[in-house]
Image 1 (cartoon, rainbow, N blue to C red):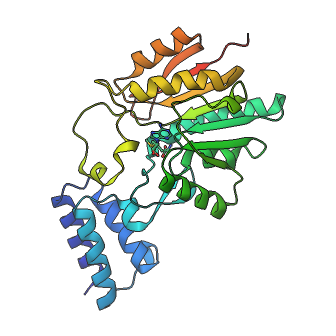
Image 2 (cartoon, helix red, strand yellow):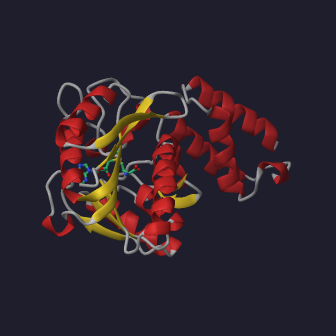
Length: 280
Ligand SMILES: C[S@@+](CC[C@H](N)C(=O)[O-])C[C@H]1O[C@@H](n2cnc3c(N)ncnc32)[C@H](O)[C@@H]1O
């Protein structure tokens, strides 16, 4: 069958199934099977290629996340393993990483033996992006799920990045990290009760829901734990839902954080908490 005709048919099927970026997803599926960028696709598809693409398009029409179908995802220029059981990192989170890196790079000029901790590290996306760009820092990731932890360790090994990933509960203070960290970051489960896009039904529930009527149960604990881990002058950044700006700011101020702000994402929605531990 003619490749471009088959491609247009795939785009139409994805659009009809409600897939938001139908053309982009179809292109990535075709490139994955054909192992070639769009401008050098062959004029015709053979039977095997047609069948493989057909199967993948059907999975995407069933709203399985693209990352699970491809077995990989991209974050801050890094290619990461993706598989069911592990949260698919979202591009919005890159804004938090950008802020952490701007701050971390200037810290690197004046201090040594700097440590960063990523609470609820999932696939390792944030911790790995930090380590790739702050090579002199010791970066640690903490994650509860053994499947996610395994993927994070595999990602670190493949990328040659020396992040330490540990298994544990991020809502409980681990005494070994008390007053040790210059930087604590987190993208914890925070979603309040609401209807989510169909794709999320494939992702682990423990990665999504923040619990409580406003989804703040887990994020509130993470803010408290981060306070314990930070050194004076250290920075805490935590992604949250766009309805949680006020609540996260209030908790951080009550604990004693300074420079407390809600930062917005590229769509101008309240997206993450910025808070410093006072110097003394
Ligand atoms: C929203 S996902 C974020 C993953 C990763 N940080 C990212 O941005 O792609 C939240 C992660 O927190 C983990 N998690 C949930 N509760 C946890 C807890 N109490 N302690 C540690 N990790 C937890 C989930 O397994 C999931 O991997």
